[in-house]
Image 1 (tube, rainbow, N blue to C red):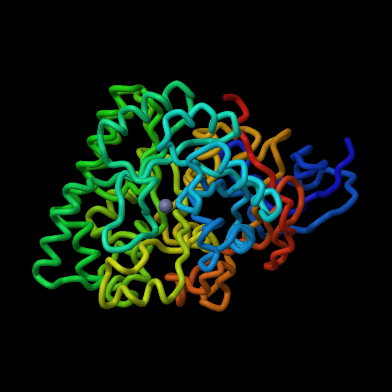
Image 2 (tube, rainbow, N blue to C red):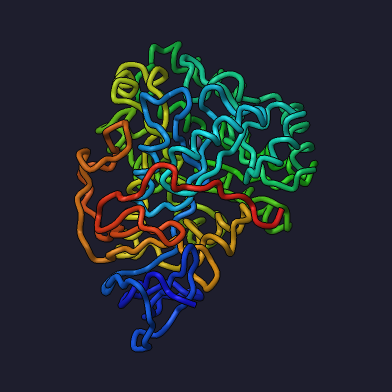
Length: 460
Ligand SMILES: [Zn+2]
């Protein structure tokens, strides 16, 4: 077989460890893995000595904002940020307009991605219309999504039409999704508890970003735990594969672990904000709504950290959630008027690499959490999520020792800001390849809109 491109002189993550090997790529796939000294004939060679070659990141939870909210982000800007962050598959979430609640709407959205995405993609449609659930599966989706709540005081990001908090309706959705054998992702939320908790703050005249942060974490996270408890019970009742989003409390993680120990089909994800951002009150005070997604008090964040290392949590996905500065500024006065969520696709790999230097992450867990486990859970493995012969050549080359300071200026996302500005990190993506082609090279985006392909489950 003729090798088109040889990545030479680096260490690649192969069979669970970093090995000094050269990676040969033929067309879209990995064709050879050879020792450094072994001669390989290749049309083109790129020297990656000093770098680690890791499987491209598979981000199963990202908000690309198109169609409908392209003043915040669009498919091109989002996937440019992904390319720079080492993400080779990015899966959109359905809070766009119109939201993909039907196969017909999803088809139109896929047409946008086909024209615009720099990297491979999919979209998790909203499972709110029971009769559409089997039709959506036929479109090649990886998973369904339900937001278990609706925002109060604002119309975005958790708008009416895709929020479901009626337990009976969730039961019916789970039963229908179980028949498809695909997972369902749920953002846990207990609307009735939240209605009461919010009112307690508002009645005291407390509406700013601090009140917002405290409301969501009130009663030591009872709102999250109650929702996760309900979801796990409905999972048990239906046998659906439940993928829990936004894990952020100690008790939720205990419940998750128990369900897993019982052998149930439950998986879960953690997002960057719970690890590096809103787990620190000083950061919340400094950045206000710019730091919120949700406030995760330190004892909960410590539990999250343990759960990603011991395998209780399977996936780190970005929950990349760009909003404009104007949409965040409102939060200083009224946290409920600011749009919740934080952008992160471009920098989470650097944050994880920095954690390896700090001794709080290992390269093995990094690869599992960001690539091989999401690929396995959503049935892309071993086409994606692994460096092995025959797999897609989706590779990120990182310089593990290069130092960087994150700046707003470096942001590729349309929102133009990052909550991580000012962080000094060690470990930077240098090149990203999607199916054998550079989409990011020597620190520059070189991918073209329309290169990305719909990535479908390979064995459903
Ligand atoms: Zn999200």
